[in-house]
Structures are given as structure tokens and as C-alpha cells.
Length: 116
Image (spheres, rainbow, N blue to C red):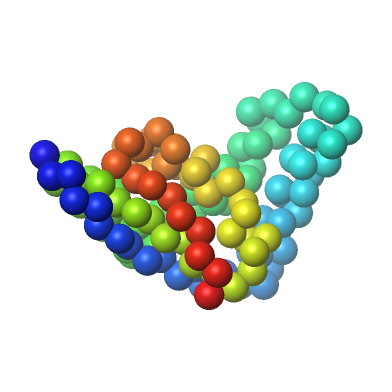
């Protein structure tokens, strides 16, 4: 198994509508925390689904999940966007469509957010 860290840069090209919907979903969750209310998995699921859909449809990430993880290498996954609010979304909860795991549960991936 290789211990080399490979960098993968993933620019996010989101529509304004998608960006606004993501922000709205996230603000709902944050509002629940601010109001000291419990947040259930079912309340987080719409945001997780949206993030997973974006991740699952990005060619570089599809290649990573389908092929590159099998090599045993480690990857620094650089999520890139110009909007800090988009970068501050919990991308780690997005699921890999091949394994069904959240990005945070894949030991070979280190998630990094980059402003562009």
C-alpha cells in the first residue's frame, strides 16, 4: 500500500439556484443548533442528499471513488469554490455512491476547502 499523498483539485460549478438551496438547507440546521434544539438524521438528510448528488456527478470524484481508492493511496481532496459559505458546508457528510460511505468515513481522503 502506497503512503504517497496525491492532490485532487475539484472546482465546484454550481448554479445559483443550487447554491442558494444548499445554503438554505444548512441555515435550517444551524438555526436548530442555535435554538438548542436536537437535529435528527432525517433533518440532515436533505442536505446530505444534495451534497452527495453533487459529489456523485463530478467526474474527478467519480474516478476517485470508483478507481483510485482501490490503489491504497491517500488523497488530499481540495474542494474549490469562490463562495466561503459553500466551502463551509459539511462536505464530509456527502456519500460516495460506490461504497455508500460518507467522505468522513473514508480513511484515504483528507478534505480541504480552497477559495478560488
